[in-house]
Length: 193
Image 1 (cartoon, rainbow, N blue to C red):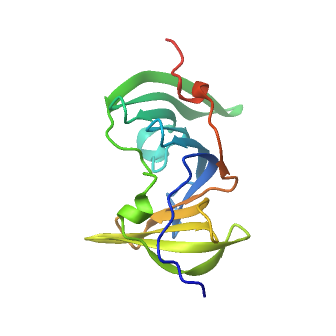
Image 2: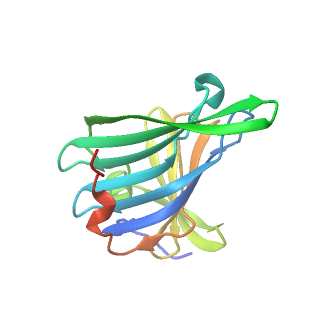
Image 3: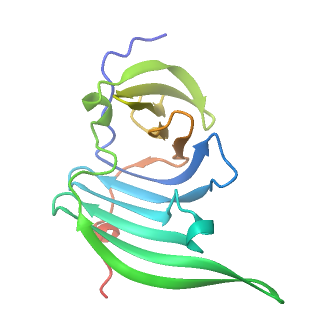
């Protein structure tokens, strides 16, 4: 097994579709998906997708959200749409309701570029993830479950991350088509309205 002295930085700009699920999956847990973009040079990120965790049973709808987190400006802008089901004699109908945009304080990107280095990640062997060989990097947290980041073996392309407070119910995000490269400015523009 090769020696991994220093965990890598994530690429300067990257994007990927993601699949979000739980380990283990409980009956009420949802599998969701979306797309994310991270640009560390501009200190900005965007995540579009169904919100997870979100209880359709408790709220009466699923929540789609597009969030642009701009740490340079210190704010996050969220656009949201509620999707609900209505059962009638003719079957189930889906309808959507646009919710008001919200702006909240935002100090740091959801996934910092140096998360492995800053978290003193330790290498935990090589694993098969999404049909590829992956290095596992473990970041320990006081009082909660460790986070595990699976990067393409020998590189810095993120394939999977496993996080959470409760070791008995962990959040998993897979990144099946990770792309490291330029992100157009238009990705981070908020539509007028």
